[in-house]
Length: 142
Image 1: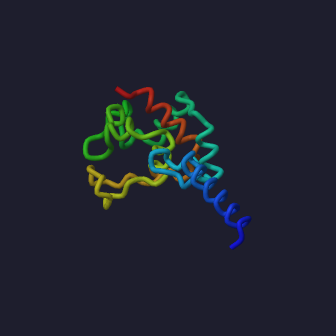
Image 2 (image 1 turned 90 degrees about the vertical axis):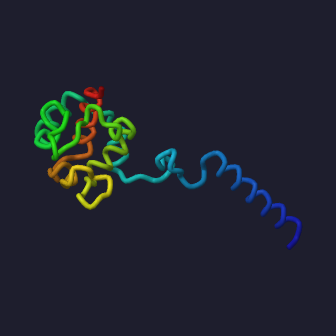
């Protein structure tokens, strides 16, 4: 290898290390993958901060049966969302992904023994509507 190629290789290696140190590498779990390319619907949902008033209406239609009118849960059916450490400990983006996926009874974190179906059983819910529901639930946190 000649000196010019060695110098070029060294610069590329140095720049690669610097970029990775500044967040240019693979996304980490702590950032939630914010540097990754995201699907268009996820980007749109993140841009939408959620309308709690609309979310209340959507909650009444999609979540009330299992989580109750006051979001305090229905015994052996749906968890209390107002005091939920799970709700408090996850970002809106993480909750959106969770609601879209649901939690089957086979999931070891399912403590009710009842499936939480994707989108609460309403496949027509959009990311924006779910984000509105999350905004409403945030207003109820104790």
